[in-house]
Image (cartoon, rainbow, N blue to C red):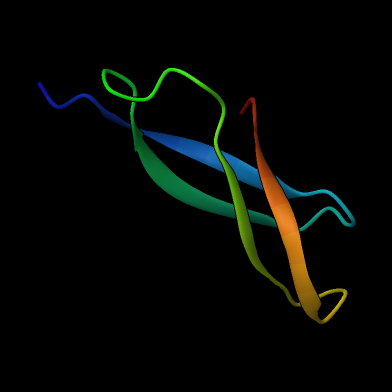
Length: 51
């Protein structure tokens, strides 16, 4: 069985979300990415949240 699981990334400035995969066997911390947020039209920090 694969160790990849879907996670949800939510913007710190709005409620926009991305979905991505994370290998939980190798990465134990919460993930943060800087991605484009279409609601604010800028690049924002996206943090992992519970589903």
